[in-house]
Amino acid sequence: MPNRRRHRRLSNPPVMEGYKPFGIPMRKLESVILLYEEFEALRLADYENLLHTEAAQRMDISRPTFTRLYDKARKNVARAFVEGKAILIQGGTFVADDYWYKCGECHETIVTEHPVDHCRECDSDNLTTMNDHITDGKKEVKVRKQRKAGN
Image 1 (cartoon, rainbow, N blue to C red):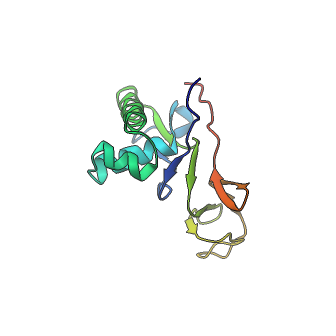
Image 2 (image 1 turned 135 degrees about the vertical axis):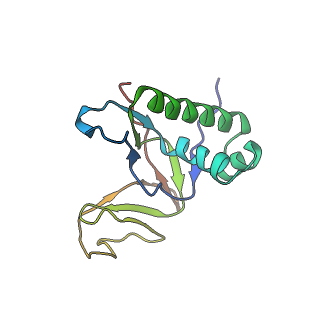
Image 3 (image 1 turned 135 degrees about the horizontal axis):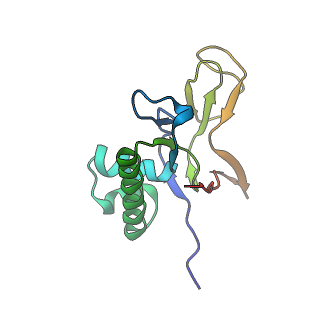
């Protein structure tokens, strides 16, 4: 019987929703999905220069699981670069200590310890939750279910 799937701990959402090749309209591009936890693996290993063991501890996962996430993320980014595809950062199975929102008006990313109902930049109430909330007994756990990509 396999071990239960552990939710990967993320510290912050990415500051953007993705990338696209320069000079090609988005409507003409295919895309590659980079899961939030894959983005976090790239951030920890390549941007913060952590060893895989240290990064795995930060994400609350095993070192082999971290290495698999990291390899998958690198392959997705390489595929997008080589094949001229857009990269969309979305989905996955993770937990976060804070509430994450994206404003539909000014596109500000909001990270707070408590739920909010309006944007602190433009005062709009057009907010999209970036991580869903599930109550697990006394502790509130934030989870976003994995989306299946068609590519």
